[in-house]
Amino acid sequence: MSGWLGEEGWAAVLLSLKVSVWATVLSLPVGIAVAWLLARKEFAGKQIVNGIVHLPLILPPVVTGYLLLLVLGRRAPVGAFLEQTFGLVLAFRWTGAALAAAVMAFPLMVRAIRLAFEAVDPGLEDAAATLGAPRWRVFMTVTLPLILPGILTGAVLAFAKAMGEFGATITFVSAIPGRTQTLPSAIYGFLQVPGAETQALRLVIVSVAVAMGALVVSEVLARRVSKRVAGQ
Image (cartoon, rainbow, N blue to C red):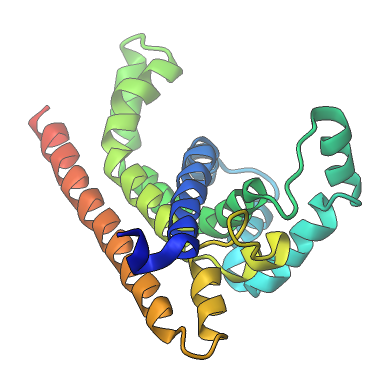
């Protein structure tokens, strides 16, 4: 099986899965918090926050990657501080690829979860609160189960976006085989080599299969959760 994709191909696939999972898991709590803030709260500068959240969808991915490099590069103030204080290096590391993928996927995650929040009747939460339940308990026992299908949708959209992210990733961490070369950058690299089109096609097939698999799993889980919530 290793001969079908080759060592470099499988390394890119495994790295993309690793990057996408970490990008999704680490950004999910922040995504839920930001979606709740935008859906339920009114405050000065709300439209500015909303614009910043969705900025990666508007900017060219290369620009986003370059901005990350300016802020988090090893010679940048924040990047130098992280390295000297915590020993954390993001630029040209797989951790940086996860960060770049998370930034690019974040707007899709927030949008899906925000729509789920807006679909929940605030009266249900208010009714639970009037019975004496603290707000955190209302959120955990009433709101969270109701928005769970939206959370699953947002997580899968973020995962799929992270798997396909190319511009920001290659700008921020380059495409070092075995270290930072993700699936999209590997496909691009093979397309630049004469006679390697077949290898690129195989990676494309893997990419499509992973994305479709994630969507199917998300749909099945969302339906099960929706039926369980309706049954309650």
